[in-house]
Image (tube, rainbow, N blue to C red):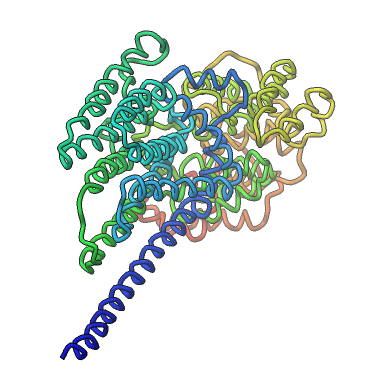
Length: 628
């Protein structure tokens, strides 16, 4: 009887062990799947889908390896995070390199979440919540990158979380309550100037750990570090404010280091990733004290998988997605490189209605390629508002500097660089344009001042060296194709006026009403008169152009025929018109008479297939365009 029992027991044990092995193997595969999926998603949302955004983010940042730069950051609490954040942001100059660093730190957050809170492997999916939240804090930005007053934003919060999680893991390993009492006190006292809010958040996690340990062990000595920590969280920032910080507002005392995003109804959703981040860290503090069953439960695994993909859905749903924004970022980079064909390629690939910035950038590219007279009305026109206008971002802040510079208004470009420098701090973008503006104005000492700063950056030294050659040898500027194209546009009366923050309106009127000048400026003025639909501005510029050029571009011919027909004042029969243009104009008149009694909105559909890419269609049907 005993021998039979002995034979059966191993058999039952072997089956149970096999079952556990299979369950653990399945759990391991599932956890590996969570990890691989997160990495793939992160790479898609960063260098694949938002490559131009990342490049622009580093262009709107500045890190200098100087003592003065470090001291400037340390004038407010959390300065070390800003310093390190701006240092790492510059690596987005190479989107794949910068993204790889960012993703490695996200994975470090996930690993530290797992270890610091002692999360069981079967709850592995939960440890990705903070990393998803931090990834969303970058992908949700959109137009906010132009107005965000948080240097190093992309990395500063990420680094803050890494530090407090690592500190929590170390703190939990210390057995002596006296040592923990000293550490929690020094943690706040010494690290608040460097970490700001994140020093307080880390100390709060220490206090929660002590409080929950007291509840579990009933050991009263646990209360001493907890009480000391809570007191120091309140008192230490007040002490620093009273005796050290002179430039930090009182209302930022406990939030220094958090992003400078308003709590208004319009902007509050930008706080969602940070809310998810901090709530998850607090919940993990409590979860780490719960005793879970060792066996893997399929329902529990299903629920955790749902939570994991819900976190991904939050990333997908709240990430800033806008075709126009992506196009604007790509156009901005192409304009700085004078890659005008790429600007037109981007305009052609656009599927929806463009913003005014895209229309202006497209017209600029056509002008630089000397084909605007034939093509400027063949591209999609529109005035779609910027998505999420609650960010109070204006056209001037997004695309004003390159448009002013390329249209010869270098003083306005310089002025807005300086004003934004005062408002948002110095950026690489401002430095680049301030150097170029100073060069065109032949203010070489001023150009040297800004170029010396640009030389200290990691990735713009080669550009600064090119500028330095022109500073040292101004005659080289005559060979610069970009400067050669801009100089003729600067031949206007230098008046003290203002743009009122209305970029497009100011450029159109300033250039459209300019009189005389080099041929390039005359033609640009002619193009502006067409956009303004001003007959009075058109005629003198048109005839000046016609007298000095052998060929009249198509759109100028179209405008001359139309205005002559409408006014019956100017005889253009002596001019050489393209036979196809004349034929199309006769067809236009015929159709206009045919559909004279048809409502305008209805007749647009009849005229668009044939005349949609002509000045005539723009003149009659494109109305109500407003700069946003």
